[in-house]
Image 1 (cartoon, rainbow, N blue to C red):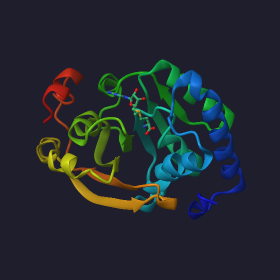
Image 2: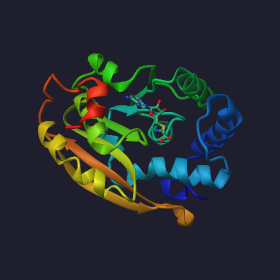
Image 3: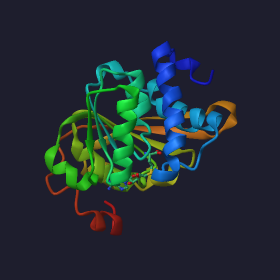
Image 4: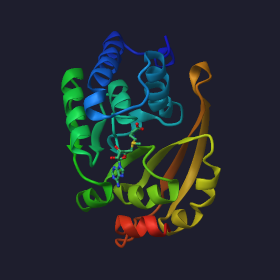
Length: 226
Ligand code: SAM
């Protein structure tokens, strides 16, 4: 089985089966993914989300926030495998948040906060708070850094899920990393099973508190990233 590497329990295998079925059933209504083939969903969504296990010890993480969760990736697969996580999902599209709430009821997972806001608005409630923040397919790295790093406590980690062509984004991020007192600690490159693509997880560590002027308004960030 595709997820064998993650040593899932029977309960977790069943949760992923239910997740797949519900995602496909509800996809038309909520417009969550263009990938619908079972094997592809397991590899490109579930396996890919869980790949962070290879680069991070989740048992050391308590408060975890996923920005722009969409259909739940990577947050929900990680929460299934690590139920101890106190998870916040931030997703501005109302119908996607509804999907995520219904999904979590179905999978009987608890300790999740559903925030129907944009990251740059929600930050007012949660500065310097999380041990871990993730984002997959939300924005380019220098934009993400300004949106995400203010959420982290000092010493906290941001994992950015990227395709194999992350170099340009990495190159453009030097100034943002400096201004936001953070460093790239490691870039984990991996091959998805069945040759379904080469991906990377960029692991960034925050070293000092973020200045209160960040994040700026989204229009400003988009217009000129740090
Ligand atoms: N992370 C999921 C995945 O990998 O399948 C969804 C990716 S989808 C392409 C991007 C998501 O980011 C959308 O659901 C969108 O609503 C959300 N998003 C875009 N800008 C955002 C922001 N400023 N704050 C929070 N979420 C945002």
